[in-house]
Image 1 (cartoon, rainbow, N blue to C red):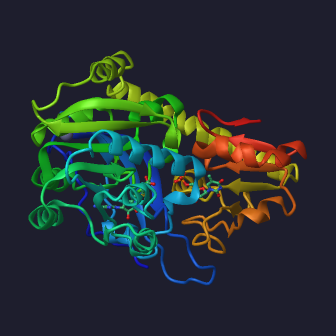
Image 2 (image 1 turned 90 degrees about the vertical axis):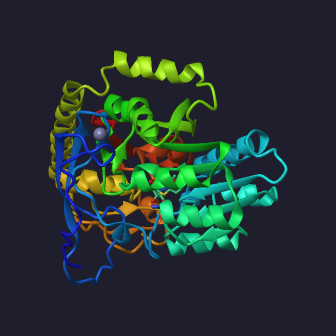
Length: 414
Ligand code: SAM
Ligand code: TMP
Ligand code: ZN
């Protein structure tokens, strides 16, 4: 693969065109979900991963955009149903929509980024009219095998208009961990405007800037995570397209997210939770550049501490493996310069990642079974957002003397 440089470097806010200020440069990075075949030759795609903030609307976003077809394609390896916690989470989301927004005569829900049908599966079982948009054909096929109706396509203005013309207005447009992946949100919001019924809601949940700053979870920043949302920046964006932020909910999943509910301006009364989160963000000075610069300094401190720890462990002859070949770990390994000499392999439950090499640093990926065969001295927890689930099933590792290395919110060994 050769480097593609035709993506426009914004230089201006992707939402409002305002002036942007850079506060963190995580260097040259590969595609975070592009796991290489061991014998693959040719050049890998790299881009500069830097984060900027818009002075006008406060939106935090990447400085460089990676073309979408390089990230979301037939071989996109992320299967949402790989985590039992997430399966439960999305079953709950489906039940909640079925009990509230989808109780009319012939309700209709559209999901952007339905992946393997983790949420729409339950909607389909309830016999409710639905459509998933999923451009990554591999995972879309898995959803289809569950009986979910899927269009293998990107949601954007043109495709949303087609659905509206063919199937009528939607009561709910829902999307999880996908809105923040989409630089062209102007097109998505115009599409939502065209597709949503007059009293419909547009609900999305994504990693929350407040959690990222508080936990210094800088590994939430990678090619696919183009935006880091806050309530303030989402409200400013919604307003530009005739929507209003009418509800927010903090979620514990994926290291801390917020579920935002948008409705057409003036149609629904915002819940008190919206004003509360605005106030919290003001008190935390969340979108002040000084806060973001302090966050960047913490990121550099984690890099220094993590590299020093791994180098010491290597010098002492300890064996360290990684746990979870997450997209997030691409940022950590490439920013910190961690390769197979420091972490001998990474274990992961995803078949599409196994027996391949991690992006950029080329650490071998092995199956989950390899973890205990034999246990390493230390495990670097890349999938820290699934810590509870992983700790529950890996008790034997710790009982046999193994130690976990974590780097969020700072480097520590447990
Ligand atoms: N919603 C699932 C979840 O929360 O686990 C999947 C999240 S996955 C990180 C992001 C998904 O969004 C991918 O499956 C990708 O193919 C899809 N995607 C990216 N751009 C999209 C777009 N414009 N419309 C619909 N889906 C999109
Ligand atoms: P995520 O942080 O984007 O959800 O990715 C989690 C990755 O970690 C995914 O590749 C699956 C992997 N994983 C495991 O290997 N074992 C586990 O127990 C869990 C929950 C995830
Ligand atoms: Zn802006």
